[in-house]
Length: 453
Image (cartoon, rainbow, N blue to C red; front, side, top):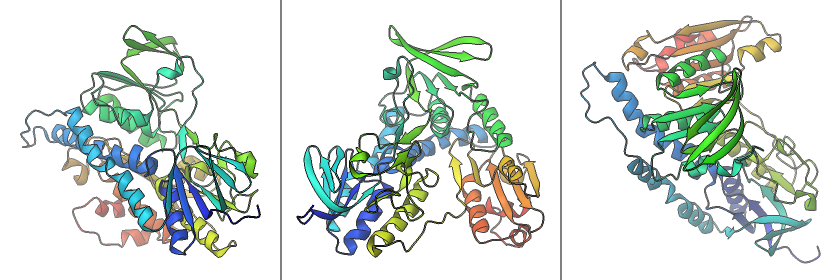
């Protein structure tokens, strides 16, 4: 290309992994554009973490009333108005796209809309219009994986679930990860009559500690959610106004009849339609191949971050950190800052929430590490008793020689904040004895940490 390109940088994807890089470049007076096929904000803000947690917040009211029943709390009609709950969610999501896009424009960034695909080494086509740039940063996130079963077109995604205007009476989830378990809990507490989760493996939430997942399963079944494990979904069929999900279970062929089926079987990098071959960008099933500098391993003028890259865990804070590194190396014109992942906490916002950071017990043993396992159910602890929690526990792995925390796993009230403190302690290199020596406000969930190590 001999003519001056239209931009110094074009960012594809207006979510967490994209907007930060665009702002960094624009602040350095780079001619910057950003493009997205969907409203600006990305999955977390519009279709994932944030709207989901608003629904969880509403259902916490039901959980609280149930737990405090007979303990002095006299509640009225403990029910949820689905349409009002969704309207509450929209008080956040409806305003975010224009606020984010307006902020980008104010920063001097050209905002574009449309389907994007590469057509030449320095050219991106946006709805048929060519846009040229010196550099590209790809942050297109992930999409629901293809199920490859008959009737897949009858299934809705988590995005569509979050836009439902009416409460589903009978709902089935294909898969047993974050989406299935969180949305199943939301649906049941919101008044759905029948909720079914069909997980292919022996237990849901395979990334989390099996002993704690057992408690999640107990809590889930206590809600009268039908949790089917080792259930291989084979087909989805229409039967009048009903949907029928046919699956193979250890004891034979089974089916569940419902009004709605939600895809919750995992996500894959959203890069299929970018035509990456046109710019020589290599990728795998895990996403765009990037170096530790977030630069494409096959095209030095292309960067990628977040769920579309073969980098760290697919979590929003990780995407933000990767974008920060990509932005620094873009501006430097060379690789000056490499990505380093601190201990990364992860939480499933069921009620109770379950959380983890660091190594699992299985992974620590596979590495040949010598450690003590601190495992205890805590439903009898004061912090659980005072809020009526019946499913609570922790498992902490403490290295024998150093006293370092190798991994922490928590379920119960406050778990989402306790795990952040464990992550901070692990990142700072605090030993179990040093954690015991910390003084926290009491009574609080944080004050339990010293008793967990």
